[in-house]
Length: 344
Ligand code: SAH
Image 1 (cartoon, rainbow, N blue to C red):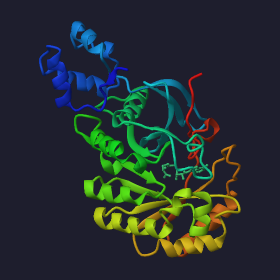
Image 2: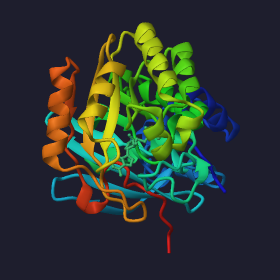
Image 3: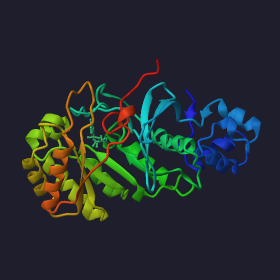
Image 4: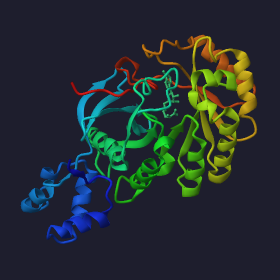
């Protein structure tokens, strides 16, 4: 398989360029072409002979669009093929302030949460930093953006996979996407969601990668969380709250708690009261969402009126909480609906 150039720094590209007998300044042109999502053959500012020599062992394609579905609400779901034939999904959502891409970090997922489609096949493999970056580059290009005028302004690591189960590649992706000559996305505009692998939180702190950190909490007591999230056996609610506090203290950024409401499981007002107790005392925000339907999982989302009552209860108790709009559900592009696909 050819080596993918996405994710290589300019210095590394310069080595490759000079090894093929070209001048080092070609590395910058190559890097710019890569960041625009161009295929090698499209880089017409580079000598043809150089491109053909380069193409023998390298490719500028990390992910390729296999299919794109657009939802009634404008949400775009991409099926991306990786160079090894695996297929992943990413979603682009349009908000008033710009477009946000939700990227996958793994093919499949090993966390096996009881409500989520991503873990149905287990973990297939980690994505490389270049592949994650490629999801952003390709969607940016497809949405009419370039390097100076990005169509995609915000990134959320909330697609398939558990980012902290692939820490090194995710951290490298965060560094790469933030480079001035790359897509120059401020980490303030990046959100990372974890099911609670709290060692990843401490690594982010150590590495100074201060994104907006989101914890998938989904329960206010361990008994309930154990039933729906196997990860709770090793990383329980107390661990998560402690890590959230450490993150706030180190970064000064308020943390977000995701709470997907499942009918009859975690949605009574007693749970709201317990949740309010848990998140008291440091700046945080609770995002409520009614569970999206995943047919193999069989769990149902909480009714609107009950979600609203839960939210009101949290607000009464002084918790900052909002109900999140579900987007892209008609194309199976909503939270928890992304899954591994096969090319067939
Ligand atoms: N593994 C990470 C990143 C995935 S983010 C994490 O767990 O945070 C995807 C978010 O959607 C998580 O909060 C996840 O718990 C939630 N989710 C999963 N399945 C869902 C469903 N069916 N309906 C609503 N939210 C769901």
